[in-house]
Amino acid sequence: MHVEIPALTPAEPGRKTVVTVPVREGGSTVGSYALAAGEVVVVVVCSDGDLVVRLEPASVSTVICPPGTVTPVRNVFRLLAPQDVDVRVEAPAGARWTLRIEQPDR
View 1 (tube, rainbow, N blue to C red):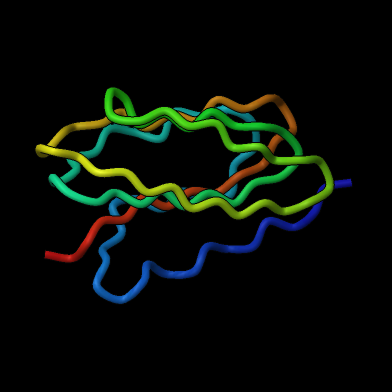
View 2: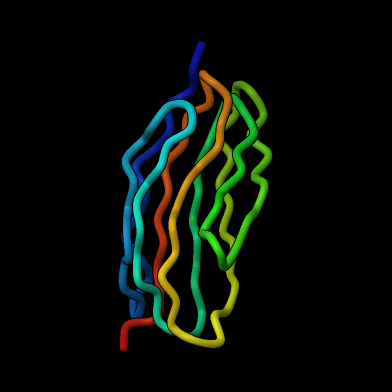
């Protein structure tokens, strides 16, 4: 039995949302995005299977998502220069997740 993945809250004040992905199941290619230099925040909420979140070539992270629980994760990293990234999530069948990428509003 799946647990409900809640909708993501809006980005914090002073931040802009680069992309929000509604709840998906299994792996998915999200798209390509231009990120500004500086802080990048990746918010993931997931359940029922571990994820590998790729913002290539800038970042790769593993998110542990135990079955039957909702796991919220917030990863922060910095880009030294503007960069185009390809966003992809690798996940087993049955894993469910939602994702938001945000940066400071400039």
